[in-house]
Length: 112
Image 1 (cartoon, one colour):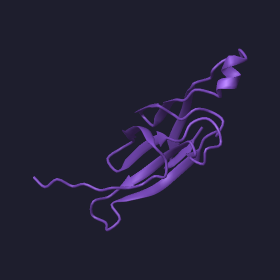
Image 2 (cartoon, one colour; image 1 turned 45 degrees about the vertical axis):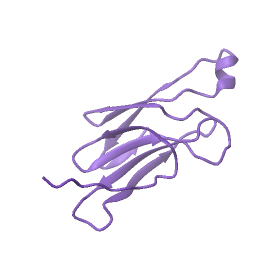
Image 3 (cartoon, one colour; image 1 turned 90 degrees about the vertical axis):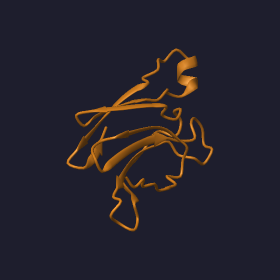
C-alpha cells in the first residue's frame, strides 16, 4: 500500500477538520478575537492525489473578525455545525453567546 501525503498552508491556524465527502475537506480556524491580522475562516479544500496540486482551496467563508476562532466542527449530510464563541465583550455585557453556527454545503457551495 502506498501512503500519500501533502502539505498545504491555508493561512490561518486550523482547529477543526472534517471530510464532507471523498474529495472535499472542510477546515476551520483563525486568529481569534480582535484585529490581529489572522482571519477566522471556514474553508473547503479539494483533495486529488492524481493532480500535481494535490490540495486546492475550493470555497471559503470569512467569519466575523471580532468573534473568537472556530474550535469545533462536525458534518452530517451536508449540514455543518461549528462552535465559535462570540466577542468576549458581548458575553461580558450579558448579551449572550450565540456560539453554535450552522452552515450548509449545497451544490458545492457553503451557505450560512
